Each structure stands twice: as structure tokens, then as C-alpha cells.
Image 1 (cartoon, one colour):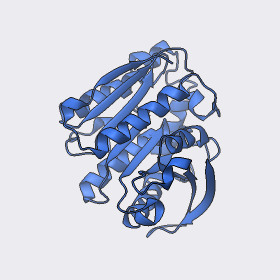
Image 2 (cartoon, one colour):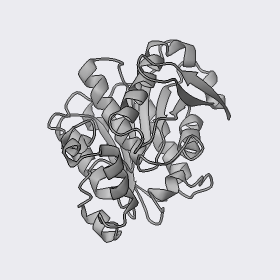
Image 3 (cartoon, helix red, strand yellow):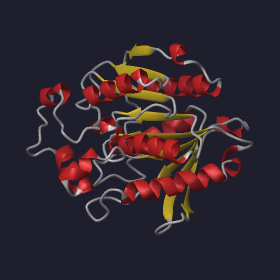
Image 4 (cartoon, helix red, strand yellow):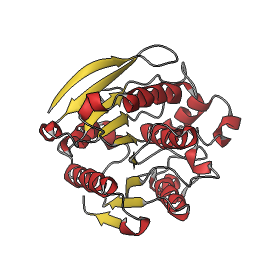
Length: 279
């Protein structure tokens, strides 16, 4: 595994730093390219804290560009999303320079990064560019209301909750929670977005919104592969804790590999299955 920090100059705003991961398998000209967004409830996180997921994606055979997107509250919605879309567009236009001839392009993210990845998939569909082969969402923050059963079970309601605080600082005002790029789960039109891999866990406080989004995508005709890891995992916090030896790491890497294989062959929605994975 090798990595190097590079800078992408987008069409809007300041240059954005990305950390590019390459594994041994990426010598192949068919290696996918993944634009990855780290976690941190929109207000924290870094390229370092996103290392675990980025490395697992690279070990699954991808070239991974992990994005150092701007954080709230200094950069509220949609600044992080605009910066990420700049990177996605830049890489999409020159993807052959990243991983060979016409590689497939994906977005991926965990927690707040999962929100941004889902929003990027919506933007790419709406602007008809770049063409995405898939979106990978791990315990994504999709619902600003934080009113699901899994949140209540975790006793992580609005009061003294880092995710509620992150939403507040990211959105700036409650009205923005109705924007589909801010809260993808409220989108009234999900048809036509890229095939999706959604992964959560039994003890994940974001479990219900992950499963709800998977269901809504499936009902909209989007091919979905859905995995639910057995507890305990410590998600979503464990996703940025540098858990290289976590018991769920192998299952997650395998999920990535299978999703890359599925989407490269352009399967029908019926070929995507739900999986309950032992962590």
C-alpha cells in the first residue's frame, strides 16, 4: 500500500488536498477510481482519520482519492459539497491518468462523508456528469431530524449529541435540512442515481436511516447491495478510530470487492442482494 498527498485545483474556490492510495492490485488498467469522503459529523475529521476506510477500498483493488474537504461551521452547506464535486469532476475528466484506460468512477464515504457521497451521486445524476459506476455509503448521516429508533436506542438524541451539533453547524438554518443535497433521504426523486452499496451495523446509531435509504433507493429502481454487520462494531465512531485490525475490516473489504465486481458487469437490480455479515 502506498499513498501520496496531491492537490486538485477545482473551478471554484481554493485548491483541495487529496490523499491518493494505491494498492498492489492497481497495476491493472481496470482498477476503479474512488473519490472518498471521511467522517467527522461535518465539523471534524481529516485525511488521517479517514485512513481506515480509504485503505480498505484500496486493498479491494481501487485507486482512492480521499478528499480534505472544508469543515463547518467556518464552511457551512454547501461549501464542502461544492469542493468535493470539484474534485469529483476533475478526476472524472482525467480518470485515465489515475488508473489506466477508462476506469470506472465511484464515490464513497462514512458518516458525514456518506452524506456527501450520497449528495454527489445526486448531483452527478442531475448534471449528467461525471458518470458514476456506484456509490458506497457506510453508516451515512442522511436524516437531520435524528428521530429514528436506532438513534433513540443509542440515547443520542438532539441534546448533547455530536451528530445533532454537527448537523446544526453544517446546515446553519433548519430550512436547509429540506434540501435534497443536504439531507439526501428527503429527496423526492432518487431514480437514476448510481448503484449503491450501503453498510451499517446492528449497534450503529445511524442504522435505521441507512436501511431506510437503501429501501427508498430500491423502490426507485436503483440497484442496491445492503450489508448489516453483527454487533459489536462501535460504528459510526469506530470508522475513524484507526481500527485497522477491527473484526469487521475483512468483511468490509470483501463487500467493496464484490460491489466493484457487480457494478463493472452492469447487473440488473435483481442481482443485488441483502447480506447479514458476521463481524
